[in-house]
Length: 131
Image 1 (cartoon, rainbow, N blue to C red):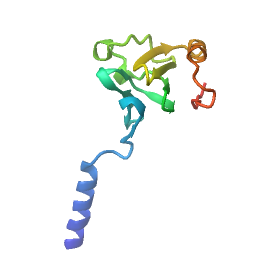
Image 2 (image 1 turned 180 degrees about the horizontal axis):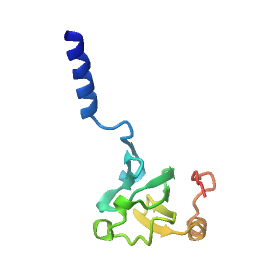
Image 3 (image 1 turned 120 degrees about the vertical axis):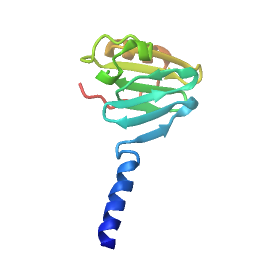
Image 4 (image 1 turned 90 degrees about the vertical axis):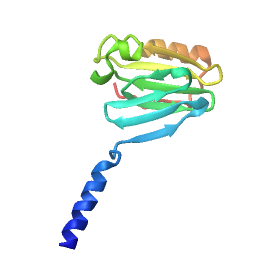
């Protein structure tokens, strides 16, 4: 009987904690990557600036944070985010200039490539992109 209670207690406590996909990482400039599930991953920063879900990939150094994002259903509502999202079938790119404390985007791929060149983002800072 004690073994059964121990097993049930272990299952109960394990189910109460955060999910196995919950993850966060501190980024430069006070930004943070937060993943609550596959479709609920975003980057949150100072002054309530953030990139809504779903963040697919990001890369950073002390000067820039590059983000590859595909909007997902839970984040499509513009009233909640304040960011215009055309549809969930597109991918979007963002650049955070850490030193200037500015968030730029969303960009198409070509806009993103032009903007990163204009800003002098080093080529070594690369996103993992699936297109």
